[in-house]
Amino acid sequence: MTERPRYSIVAPCYNEEGVLYELHKRISAVMDSLGEPWELVLVNDGSHDRTPEIMRELHQRDPRVKIVDFARNFGHQIAVTAGLDFARGDAVVIIDADLQDPPQVILDMVQKWKEGYEVVYAVRTHRKGESWFKKFTASLFYRLIYRITDVKIPLDTGDFRLMDRRVVDVLRQMRERHRFIRGMTSWVGFRQTGVYYVREERFAGQTHYPFRKMLKFALDAITGFSYLPLQLATYLGFAIAALSAVAAVVVIFTRLFMGAAPFYGQATTLVCVLFIGGVQLITLGIIGEYLGRIYDEVKGRPLYILREAIGFEETQAPSVGQTAQ
Image 1 (spheres, rainbow, N blue to C red):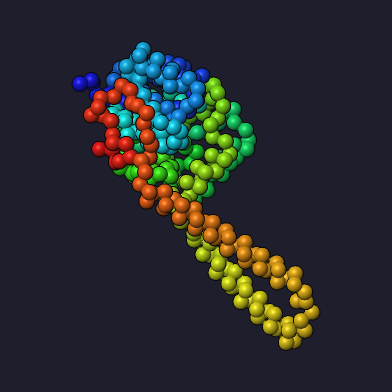
Image 2 (cartoon, rainbow, N blue to C red; image 1 turned 180 degrees about the horizontal axis):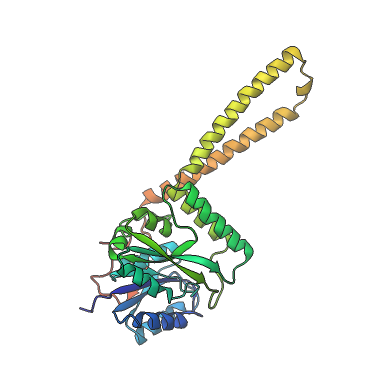
């Protein structure tokens, strides 16, 4: 029986061959300075480069490196989930493998954790190496989510955070498919606080979050934690109905007392029909987004499928697709 780690560092990886050696080096330097046992759980999210081979090499050199290898790409949030399923530490840190989140910040998180906080999230004060469009859309997204969701998610925070074992055990019971980890972490409660840091440029490679993925991520966050889109569709329906009632009164009045000249031709009717049809399609689309997510849930497929897990004891491995115990 190996010594239970005090800390687990979970790093999802997708085509990160250019950064893994440096990631291990920096994580090791930071965690060794604490003088307590730790493990690094690397989750290979269906990489197509040498990421799996480098992971195995790191495991051979340092048994504290553990590997969770997916059968295919399941996405960043699912990879984080798998890491939480396998992590054994009393405190678990989620960090991106690209080193935009400096490992040194973990020391500040650990200090807050030892003060009694059960969730310590990292707040970005500045984002280096990112375009104005990325910064603007990210800022807009965080503020939109903060205003429309029932759960108050801290502004300018990503998944980079430390969580106590009790928080992780609760999250492991939450198996929804369209996941928004930072929202789920806020939803569970417990004592939470933040530490501030400057987000660095990627150490190597390119971003794996293009605009299309960012948009999908935003939809998952909104539909997972807010009914506002459905409520807006309802409000819009009432507004159009009221506008139609007013328009009907205006038409009747003008026909009786002013003649029908302002309403000759089909242009006005066509515009009204197209407008109402567009609103109906938008409303159906909003309903479809929620319905599609319900359909994904009721199918009951596992969140991820493993090719293999390396470095774990058999008793550690959770049942794939079931709530981890």
